[in-house]
Image (tube, rainbow, N blue to C red; front, side, top):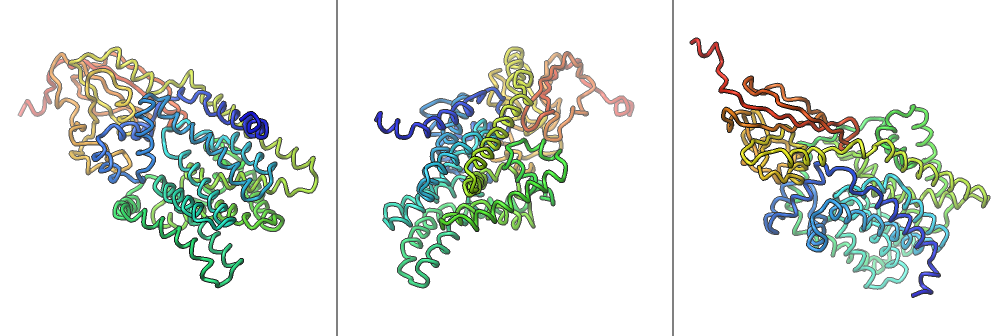
Length: 510
């Protein structure tokens, strides 16, 4: 064992670095809507959990794995995000394995692992209880076993490739783009090596047949979710700056908001660099596995833009999977430079920029002054009485409050003009909402002397409710700055005293 650690000491230093930057402040940011959806979903009985997953827009494997994790480590925010941290660290190791196997260069593998370890784009999503880092790990392991299968043609590795590919597709639908890229590479690789010798394709097609058969039970649900997204989704249509902004995030690790404020010329220059890098890798790298890396980078962009023609599915964070191959491509490019000093100087600069953006992320967010929903819920937990009424005025803050809620009062979601959950947009979390969670009138359940607490937000396009009954007297208002979904969001809690029944004087006169 000591020889193993000694032989791989640089790798383990990188793993430790990856762990440190991912564990730092991992539970300091309040849980938000998407994470709360994950947390609440896994508490249902198994059969109901699967039913409700089918009503959502994501495949089920992440929720299954998170639930098993919850059985061991509990339901705390530290545990829920710990799952993402664990697979974020595992992804760094998987990148090392893949690059070492594909390109057979230790320094290239270590460099790719280090760049992944310090990538703010990758690090950002370990602080979310969502499926992204689980998906990155499965994708890289799928690529790793594809390379192993091609090198050995062993059934063992083809089956492992099929297993990880199927698992990736069961984790996030953007994995279809990445796994398609791997399949496209596979076909081209076999054709270039064996031409039309059909026997050479046998195990490759058998592996994909296993993937398809494993997905058959989910196809009906997939088709429902696909149409749900196509008919009604929240992501704005991509424009001519969407790809340049995403490219900037992948290259520098800066935040999306910062990228959107960059001058056009910087975004254009970054895109020109990426295009040149792709050209250089394609021309200079001798290993055929360079095409696997380049396809893994490019195909998700082409696929998402094509499907966004009808309904946009283009979202920066979904390119976390493509970013893995982007980091590897950058390392291949740097190590293709003839001057050894130049390649390491440029690598150092890139790592320094990444680390600077990592530290800047925490500096900008300043978690101490942005306690968000965690603080708002703590205030309510300490002040709401058992007989009080508790209303939430935003569907995007309802679940995360429910996660923190210890008041003993079941919160209700205020939905004026909407009587049924089926009338709400699915992206507000209707998969785990019921009609009993809704209230359509502020005063439907109140009487004189009641205390009513209203939680609302400036995030997600929200604002102060403007239809509070006139007979509700404002007792106090508290607010807390929030980080997610973006800086500038505030969580408000208003306490009202119901004075007396409100009578419309014009109605009464009649």
